[in-house]
Image (tube, rainbow, N blue to C red; front, side, top):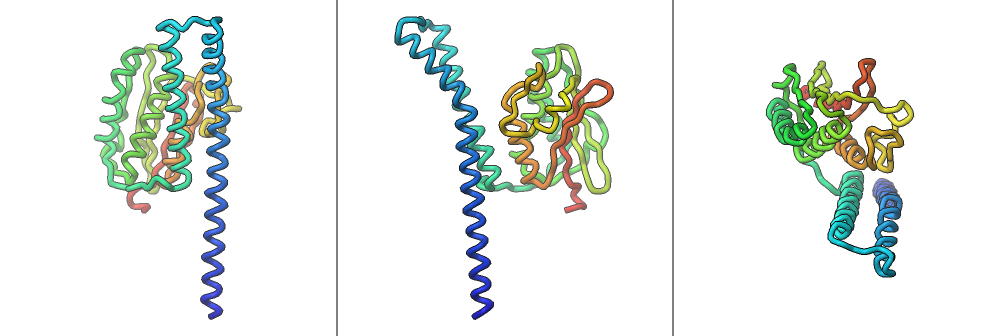
Length: 245
C-alpha cells in the first residue's frame, strides 16, 4: 500500500508539472501572438480607417499591398503555432538514416534559382559527404531551408556561400558560411523567438531561426553561430554521429 501511494503521488506530481509546463507554453504563445501581431494589425487598421474616411484611396496597387500584409500576418501566426507545437512536443518526430551527399545536393538544387537572382554561388565541400546521420527528415529540410534562405538574404550580390561537413568521433557538423558579420551584442539573441535585428544584416523576427533551433534540440542536436576573422558568418548544425547513438 505504501508503494502504491508513493507511485500515485509521483504520478500526480508529474501530471501537475506537465500541466504547469503546458500552461506556461500557452501563455508564451499568447504573448508571442500579441507581440508580433500588434504593430501590423494596427497598421492595417489605420489604412482601412483612412480609406473609410476618404483620406486614403484604395487603388489596385494599395489593395495588393494590403493583401500581402494579410498574407504575412497569416504566415506569422502559422510560424508561431509551429514553434509552440515543437516546443511542447505536440509534433512527433521520426528519425531516419539520411545520406548527407544526396540531401545537401538536393538543398543546393532547390535554392539555386533563388541564389542566381543575386548572382550568388552555392558551393558544397567535398569532405565527409558520404556520412549518414539519424534525424527527422522533415525537420532537417526546415532547418536548412531557413539557414540557406537566411544566408542568401544576408549575402551581397556576386558573393559565394559555402556549405561543408566536418566530422570527429562523436559529432558531425554541417556548416553554412557566408560573407557578413553579426554584432557581438546580437549573436546570443539570434535564436530568440522575439529577436529583431537593429543592424542592416540578419533582419526579421528571428522566428525561422528559433524554429530551426527547436527542431535541432528535439533531434538531440545543436545549432550555433559565430563570426570569423576573415569577415564571414558561420552557422553550424552539430549532430551526434551514428556510432554515438
